[in-house]
Image 1 (cartoon, rainbow, N blue to C red):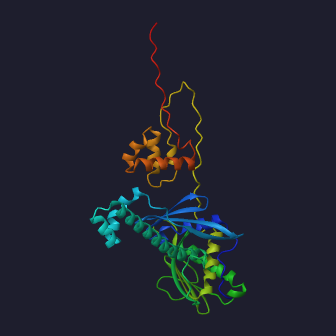
Image 2 (cartoon, helix red, strand yellow):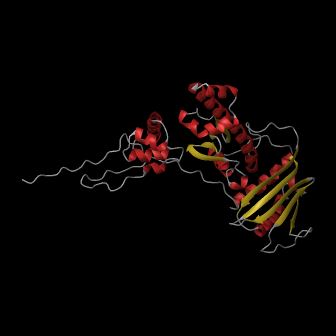
Length: 364
C-alpha cells in the first residue's frame, strides 16, 4: 500500500482550527508561539519575541478538503517601534540604519526599523509554518502546501509525545485488544503486539493495575511503533511515541489515534466563541447608574484594546487615554473607530453618556 497523498478527508474547517489549537498544548512544545481566535475559522498568531506574525485560517478548497492558509503580518504601526527598538538595534540594525541614527535622520531611521521588524515577523512566520506542519502530522494532516519539501524518502524515524486520559495499564489493555481487531484487516494481518513492564523483555500476560510505566510495541514486518506510557503528575497519561520504518506506517498511528478519540481518551479543544454585541437594556429615568458595565471584557485581550475601551467607558478623551496606554492620540482614535466597526456601538459607544446632575429646586 503506497503512502496517501491526501491532506485529510471528510473534515470541516472547524476541525482544522480545533486541531491547530491542539498543537498549542504545552506537551507539543510551543517554541514561543501563541494564538487567539479573531474571526470565524481565523487565528491570530503571536511570537513572544517579535509580536504579530500573521493569521492562519481554514477554508475548504473543495468539499471535505480544508487546508490551512496564512495571512501576512499587519503593517508596522509607528507606536509599536519603541517596544522593539532596543532589540532591533542589537540584532538587525545594519550600517544604513546606524548612519541614519547617527546623523539624526529620524524618519529614515524609523522606516528602517519598521522594515526590519516586518522582515523579522515574516521570517518567524516561516519558522512557525515548519513547526506547525510537523505537529499537524501527528493528527493526520500531511503533505501540506506550507510544509517542508519531501526528499522522496519512504523511510521515517519520528518521535513525539501525546497526552491521553486514563492510566498506563488501561491504555495497555485497550491497545492489546485493539491490535487484535486490526489483525482482521487485510493490511494488518501480520501485526504483532507486545506489552512490556519495567525490567522485563518478555510480553506481559497480565498488566498490574498500578503498572507505571509500560511499553507497547506494535511491529509489522520491519516497521515498529513503540509507545512508552507514563503517568502524568496532574492527571492522565503521557504517550512517548517513536515510529520507524516505512512512511505509510503513519497510518497505523492514525488508526490508534482515531480509536483513542472514539473512546474518549482524548478530544480536540473546543473553538472559543467570538464575543457578540452585548444588549444593554435601558434603565428607567429615575434609576441612577451605580456602576459602569464592563462590556470591554468581551473583546479579545490584544494589545491595548481593552484598556482603551475601559478608559473610553469612563469618559476619558482620546488624548487622556493616549497618555495612559503609551500611544498617540491619533492611534487611539483610529483604534476606537476600528473596534466600533467590529463590535458595534453598544460595546464601543460614540460617547459614554454621563447622567446629568439633578437641578436643585429652590424653595418657593
